[in-house]
Length: 83
Image 1 (cartoon, rainbow, N blue to C red):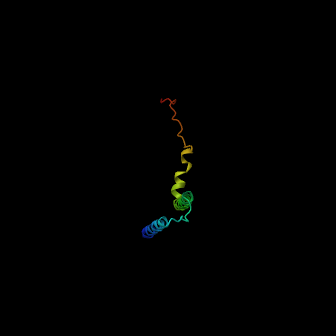
Image 2 (image 1 turned 60 degrees about the horizontal axis):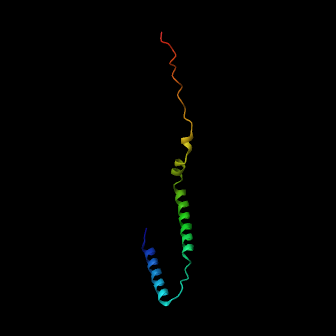
């Protein structure tokens, strides 16, 4: 993954924020709670894409094998007398 565009975007955003602070303007950016909501939306979308790509291991992990009743061996007959 190439991080250069993300770092460039962060740097430009910090630069613009400094300029807004020096000029005493209020930033038009949404409040932090809205940004956290957007982050949650992106995380949820990424989780769905990840789960779709890994459906087989998840289905295997959630399989109800542990609830199946296994076949039991018949008890050995110890009442037979050997003559």
